[in-house]
Length: 317
Image (tube, rainbow, N blue to C red; front, side, top):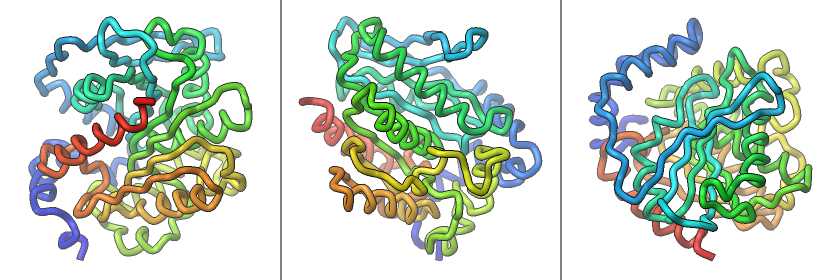
């Protein structure tokens, strides 16, 4: 039944992708760090994208809370602009792999079309760096942005959070942390198909346990590595759906995919926010798998065109 729920063009694109050669489920169990190596080998074979005219793309190294460690940010912004809204973004990759550069093909046109500065955090990865390492890097990046937004032509008072997959988890956790610290006001959080619950008990997690691009087994192992020695209970802020208090969070957008086992937990999170009075928009993409927007399909193109219009409504105030 899973295959019947997935758009034919998307399924074909998944099967034809060179990344389908990587046995993610096997490597997550036995050699998680090997995924980074194999993805980078494939990325090295790809032609680099030309940076569009009018877009400035930079890698910036900023200090962290630890004097001997720095954090790399990859920034995308329309050139020669000031007071731009800022989207602080966290890439996907099961908390274990992935890079900001993997989103160039999305962020090049998005930053220009929406007229925003996108700042993607090259955060520390599990299993070498379990929670709260990624959250700490995100918070340090946010503190730096509040001080130095002008360097990027950005507005320090107009910062939103975003993330894809595991990056959406980190962004949601950061929204809770920032609310509790009461130092910074986040304008919006934009979460694409985020894992929200390490317990893996939802109906969709059972019926879509063997879905392409995201299996239940992969979800179990990514949470295992991310949570480290704090599995039961997890540390505060690690698992967004476990947060007792969802009040006073920023307006939220959550994207879920029809054939993604993570969809029910993300929907539950959206419903909790709505019940708490948080303005929350939930989009479900029909016929889509996890990370559907990474494949060259009509579905992905139409999705991002729609999201450009939607994001303009968020960022143009």
